[in-house]
Image (cartoon, helix red, strand yellow):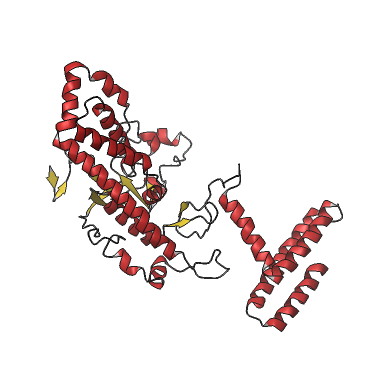
Length: 388
């Protein structure tokens, strides 16, 4: 059934053909109402270990080629579970207990099912799809890693006060990477072209979590929702669940989807970076500027990589700048007075605020001064901090 050239019912689509609704800040896959941040699937792929997946599809191929009847059902079930674990598909396909299939396939039904696995052309197509998915993931891991690492190669670890953060488009041009995003899906193989996607538009309203267990045709009783106190529930006007005009696209390959997700993500300020501590990829949200992820750091129980990075950056900043050294010496001296009860905590807090203002003013002068002027700035700041 169609309306104005658009498909209304698409129930005949295979599971490998994925419908995605791209919104302003998030996107939605198939019937899953959980909004996904841009570049989130790419992050999953970059951190993905393909060993088990490769072993699974190679085992199924061997079983089909050798016509091994004893292992046919197990190999097929394992491949189906591997498929539902793939990025994108794991957002809307649910794992099913493979033992259930083994229990119900007995006698003649079992033999017929084995014949289907070993002989049906559809199984061979499914296997080829899995092999293509593996090649797509390997290409994405290789090429997108190169692109992202090149993009970040000369970026400063910490943006200075008042310094403008370069837009991603300017960063791409500065690194001569613009050709990579326009013709080859960030791939080196001429066969990997940017996808020719068809776009449709629709108005979409994600269903709030508390309504997902109810009928899909929502009826909102304002008196019940407000609870009689005149206040609307928190998620009624949550932007995550507001209606918006979205772009509807369909994808048959992981490489095509990731290309669109990544480019749309960069258009909206999303980017992936490699943590300088644990070396894993993490998603940096629009407007943020971090060099460390917020995972628990290796060898730590509570501290995150970002916690460790903040300390390391601060220590490096103090070590390499005389203004910071002067400020930290004074700070430790006055804080020691508080610990010894020789100075009230309230007085220390007043001193700390004034000292911070003097430090920032000195830092600005120091950055644009010559050697002799810098020496005098340090002497002046030392006197001012110690007479407060």
